[in-house]
Image (cartoon, rainbow, N blue to C red; front, side):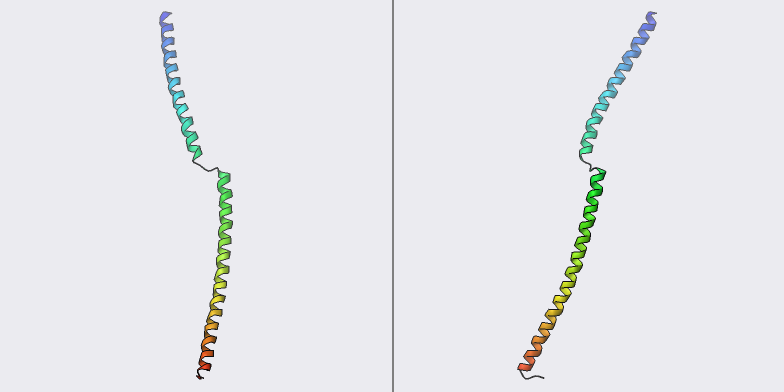
Length: 96
């Protein structure tokens, strides 16, 4: 009977030691997970921001195309103005 109690006592000591070790590991894991979570963006936020970014990109592309069209018109007007100025100067100087 004493041998049985001694064996149970040893088993309980081993079990307690192992549980304590596991709990210590889990406590450290919880802290590590909290730190890791602070570095990540939630999925909903990611997709929401991605949509906003896609809209912003489309607006920038539209603005760029608009500016390219305006630039072409300005270049045409400036070119026509310079040509007209040279034509007028050539007429003033007597060149046909």
